[in-house]
Length: 284
Image (cartoon, rainbow, N blue to C red):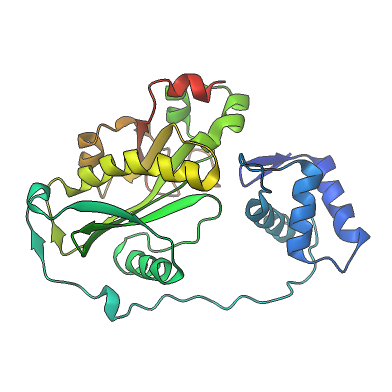
């Protein structure tokens, strides 16, 4: 059995995918991913096809020699993010959050806003920008009319032992309800901003705003937030101040790292319940 994008594929299913590809060589990769989703019953919680996840899974199968996809119809141009003047450093802000103008989170909705958000992250976040498949929400954080931070949320990690013990769910319950957890994928206080309390206030505001917008966009409401904080870089003080709970550490193996060997930095695991009955909802 092989696992891709959080789903286990049996040998029989992979054989069925091969037959699907072979029965009509004129089908594009996009058509094949949609047909595969329908054939395997792979749907999102809102009823839509898990098309992007399926495309990634099939591409990994192709690279691993399990299937042979047709050549891509269109080669995507390499999107290199080059910093421009719009993300140049601004005048320093040195004031505690209670002295700043009204703090607000503005959801990214327009293409130009998206490009600008990506550029800030690529330029100033230590992890840089990376494409994230699946459900996600991204925000600029403003003080008045001035950008002071950026934050984003995306699909949760597939399997994290300390988190899963904290929830107390079974493998089947995790597979069924994992979408009810959202991951704080990126969080950046802009480097010229030194404002005590801004980070924790942003997290607190996100905990109220994100569930509503997530439900509006994707048709279901998350009940738990998670974040992974690199121990050597950060202490996680702002998460603690925003009432997040430290439930343990990762093992430093990453998604595909070998057992017993460090391949990525160890991170603290922080969780924030969004509902009192989160455990009940996650273990249904």
